[in-house]
Image (cartoon, rainbow, N blue to C red; front, side, top):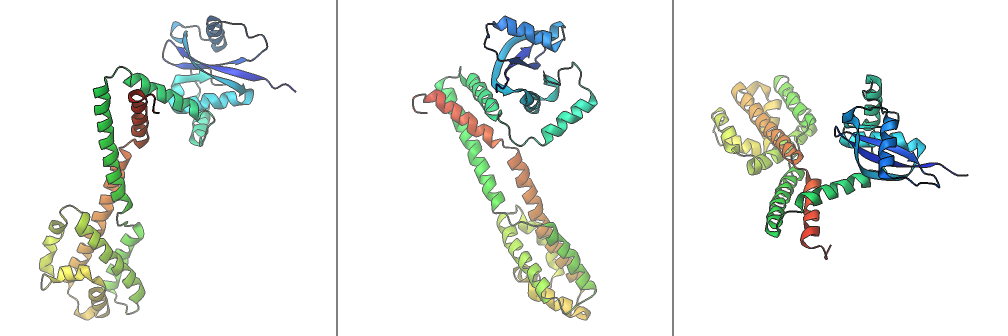
Length: 304
């Protein structure tokens, strides 16, 4: 049984849109580029000057009929819904229902057989961008890209080794406040876990958070003697256990200072984590690596 296949022509229009025109493959494929362009505009049925075909950008071969719409949606995923027409989405203006349908498909686009096509386009885009550069300019660009990679690796290492503070850790502070108000002698295990987190966080805080000492200095006077603040953060369990289990002897100022110091340490690390996340997202690491590769193919074409 013969299965019909199509060659899908990606055609640039005068208004910078793209139209995907599927042409049935037959045994008598004797036609010119002009024929394809004329057929495409006839199929599109929009005869305004801005919608005139300008050139054939690329082609997809051996496309089955039920894959044509998927190919159109994939190109919309890459270039934008408003810049692509083809298949069942060939109207000049798409309805809200059509846009919603397309968006739903794009949302669940995980993989595509046409991914290599997009990668190929990217390769030649960078190739064209760098083709007129002198060797010295390309070497300078390589150095710039290497610095970006080095910066990315440094930030990624910091992020991977950060003392992670979670919402559950912050919830434990609220529990600790309750324990100060209503002492409970049966707190050993939970208090030990929280104290261990505080101790580990303080070590990280001192080593990595800019201005760590200055953030805490205002609370020292609430500890008597003031060096007890450092002792408390180095070994918090004993201090916390004593105050919780001997509620009648606790002093409110010291308790409030303990809570404030713990919050400063944990929230400082949490904010630092968010800063690192933001910095990582500012890098397009794949693009940097792609550009490096293309430059190498230009500088050393016989080695690649």
